[in-house]
Image (cartoon, rainbow, N blue to C red):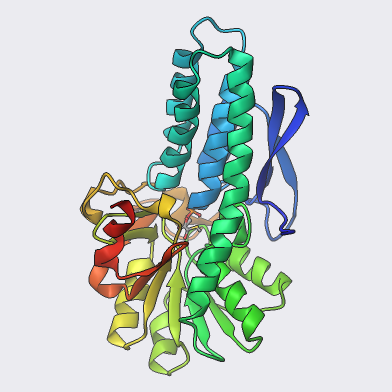
Length: 346
Ligand code: MRU
């Protein structure tokens, strides 16, 4: 499968290498890849959203642990030193559980091989990171194929934020469904919410879909219900950052509002996400930690304030959609009713 990777590990020598990633803060103005070659820079790349999207930051976390191990190759306290840096990377963003999931996968490699030398463990961490990278693309293709079955012929799909190739290693989750549906039916169309304040929909979703020649219309976040009422939206598909065992799903702020509008207009609302986005440790969406981001993302556009500095602002990065608004969760194992998603862990 020839998919350009949003993030990939590059080996430079035995037991050495770096993470190569698209700088997503520059798109659509510039398409540039950057090298991240230490754990502190990985923390910053995730925090500043050079790499973003739940599955992509998971892989960034896996790379980060490999980098932390390389930094400590001569350490006598290898496991403790790597664990400290792994925890540090894990603290970069709180909502997407894929970050914790991938870091734990890497720590498992360390714990299971603790009798081996530091260098041998580093080699295994690099191998595991590359395995997770490749699996991510395979998983997204499966999500895409299951999801394509619920897309009616000639449908217009509304999506929010960017759950595309850029949010994953490649192909995408919600946009993986779009891509798979498009391979079967070239007449499908996408309406992309702008997704204030970081504009992932405008900057990233329209960028990647138009590159694939998929008919894409950009709308602002307040327009969705208007087009639903006009009968112009057939199905809504978004990604997720963390899904509770009862199917309640955190995704980019504004998703909940879209789901309410879809329910009112009798339009099916689906979440597309890999199993690694489901948090087996939480029963309901109430337990999901929502990232609070800085005020300036809301008050400043194009380096200019859009309001008086006396105004108060609050900027949650995500919201949680209740399970009764979700028709199905599309995973690599098939499509589940939200209140049956826990079965994936039985
Ligand atoms: O803040 P972001 O850009 O990392 O948020 C991304 C989203 O909310 C995506 O919809 C989600 O991570 C799914 S990505 C396949």
